[in-house]
Image: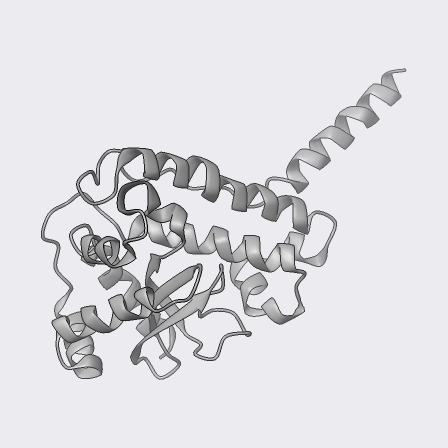
Length: 225
């Protein structure tokens, strides 16, 4: 009987470990911290329901598969070989983990001098970049994301992806390291903005965390040297 209990306990612990490889990071601010731009109800549902669902479903989808022992980067970079469930939920988990960090209630954050120069070099000006990024989000048909990424040469580019795909995946046309992403799924904005996605995209710039985007930029560039 004692051996049976130990075996049963071991099985439970193993199952728990198998379903807990990836975890959701704490939201770095209160649900209402971005009010005026993103409402508290949207943030709570987005974080605690949608994003939580991605990580939970990812862990279930990879249980007992080779992906169970891989990093999120390894999983994403081989997206073409994944099941739909793993691809969608791995992308959803990564995308949202990035998304929370590139937003902030802190007012008037500014890009670093290195990032400012890179933006000017790539797009001509900050205003031109914002216009291009917002356009990428506005013109994404259906659900998806707009991205600012660093390519393999260390240059910035703007792109958009459908569903929960991102530039790390081997299935996208423009590959790179994302440093800023805007979620244009309706659940990210519909309670406040309804069908006015363009208004949501305008508001995003009021809560953009340039400190974090700058950090990600410099990290991405250093990794490519």
